[in-house]
Image 1 (cartoon, rainbow, N blue to C red):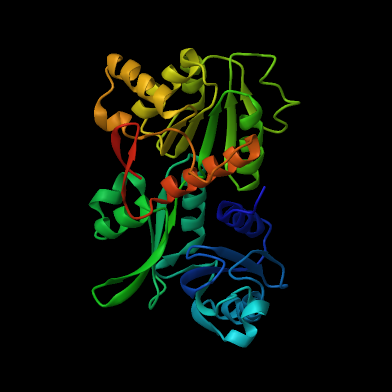
Image 2 (image 1 turned 135 degrees about the horizontal axis):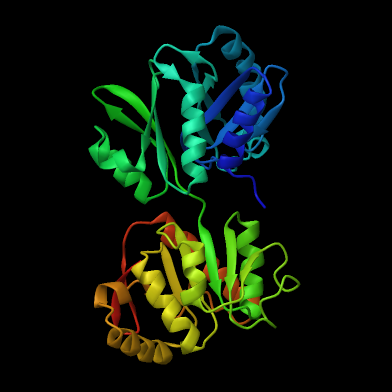
Length: 351
């Protein structure tokens, strides 16, 4: 399992409960080939122990060194690191670039209730709800914007755009730089079917940091031996999905090639507005599938969201290659790259 920024923030809260004096570093801007995107975190204590990452390696040392002053003074600091071509490989920025890091002490101060904000952020993420931490880079003031308040916030448009793309970023608000640290739930991948492709996909997706659940009514296939460490539900989708609590931060991959299983799974995933919905099968079989789902009352707009044949077209020929193509398509869809029209099985889609 890869380290996630939720891990870093949970670690920061744990260390604070242990009585450590801390600073939190957050990437607020990058350019070039910076390996850690905006919103990446690193927490440092007064002894120089750290957890997380803000670059490929060389920047961390300077951030840790600067943390001592920030912890002592109680004042945040903006650090800008330029990476020259000759040092690019050492920094992990193979093509050069720069990284801007916002370094803040985790202490209560006027207008910057960082500790309580951290607790709120961790609580919201634990409930699988998106949350945005807004920081005024000049004054250090912070506030938490919960999902229920997104549309009413003074930065509603900026929040909506960044949340849709699952990205953090700097915005200008009345001439002052504001960093919107967007934190969305980790994508949970629900794999319907426990065949060979599902085994390969579960392993790859877990390594990439996704939470995994495997659903299959066949007890002989859906076993802990075949899917070690994964959540397994031996049941039909209509019984299993309510237990998972499908939401729009989940991806559903239907891989049984059995319409008795896949059709109901697709219907429920589409109605739950899951972030990604894909199904195994040829264009011909998908055309028949669309006909069946229309008969169940699903409209064209909903059906256009099904990615079928599932996976990016990379010429995949075996289970592992198909799994790679599916995982790539999930990331493409959940990152919401610029929209482009594609044609699949006679249905115009926005990918």
